[in-house]
Structure formats: C-alpha cells, structure tokens
Image (tube, rainbow, N blue to C red; front, side, top):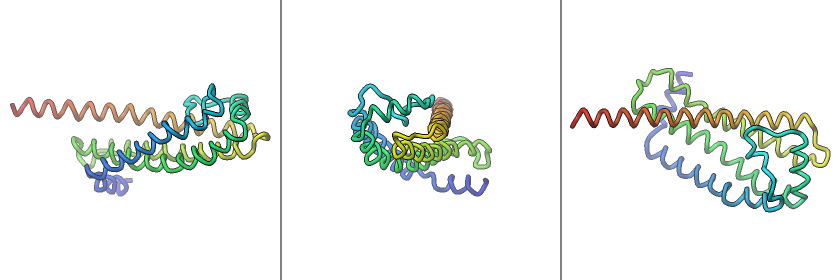
Length: 189
C-alpha cells in the first residue's frame, strides 16, 4: 500500500491533475448533455439505471427496459454504455490524483490519510461492474434475470455510496486546504 501511495504522490502534479480533471469532466458533460438525454428521449419519464443512486427493483428494471423499446435499449448499448466505459476509469484516475494532490499540500507524505485517495478507484470499479450488469439486462430483455437485476442494483448503490463518500471527503480536504492557506496568509500579513 505504501508503494502505491508513493506512486500516487509522485504522479499527482498540478498540470497533470488539471488536465485529467478537465478531460474527465468533458466526458461527463457529454454523458449528461448528450448520451443520457438521447436514451431518455425514448422514455422521457424514466430514470436510467446509472442515475438511480438508491438502486432499483426488478419491477423498476423491467419497466425501464420495456418503456425504452428496442430503439432506446440500442441507444443505451451503443451510445451511453461506450461513453460510460471511458468515464469510470477517467474518474478513478483523475479524482484519485486530485485528492492526493490536495492532501500533499498540507499533510506529511507518510500520513495514513493518503489511503483515502483510493476511494475513487472503488467507485470506478463498481461503475464498471454496474455497466456489465446493465449490458446483461439490456441483452437479456425480455428474459431478465432477477439475480442480475439485484446484483446490478447493488453495484449501482456501491458506486453511488463510494462516490458520495469521496465528494464529502473532497469538500472537507478542500476546506482544510483553504483554511490553512488563509491562516498562513494572515500570519504573513
């Protein structure tokens, strides 16, 4: 673990972090602004699996798959899922490095708090597992397995949970960084 943290600390340089952050959020913007609206255009009153942080029941999954019709399921598979196979990796790498970079600004390099930098990797891993479950559901329809829905829903909940935990920690880390910078600037004045 110490070797992995040391690698993250070396890799988390300002320009690298900024470039990855911008690229990751551009991809996310395309997902939010294009692929999700495209899929939802086939079933405007629905909520996609990806956007259900509390998970979904078997009935909700079947209702969504049915309401999307063949065209919507195809758009989900051919547009949303490919983009959502790029995004989790980008999220995991860019936010892991961002969090590491922020912590480097005020923590000693040997601090165990750097282990928290791995949370985006967990979120990304569960996002990939969620995507695999969604692919199975889309391809199995109309014979969708309750087990596949249940496991996929669990992956969605785990992804959402780790993502939420990460953003709370990110806000705390940023707040600590800002407070320390303000105090340092006040002490200099």
